[in-house]
Length: 140
Image (cartoon, rainbow, N blue to C red):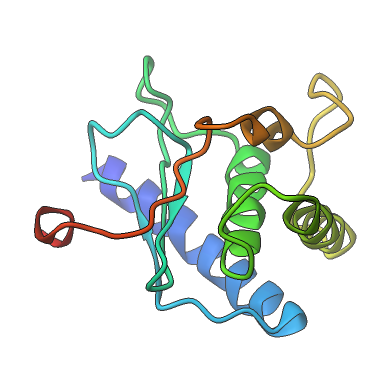
């Protein structure tokens, strides 16, 4: 029960950030949801229909991920709403969204985190969970 409450609170904050950033960058999404338990292949995924899913918990420990990591993932997936690839245009938009999130106080990486965004390592081919279509099982 406490676990579910923690996840609800985190998702509430992420949804507030997404509404604001989406408005500022004219990005439209259908839904932003917590990723299903057991899905550990990616931090986030953006579907062509505008549904974004974000993994809230660490794959091994099960602890909630740091808010800065979640916001970084959110910004990454929001950029996929416009560019469903990791092109230069995508990277520029992602970094602009992340910079805005930093200026607004949504993205506050700690001193132990690298100065650049964590998601940059995901730009290699096949490293990000960008999905073209969802199966009926995904909607379950």
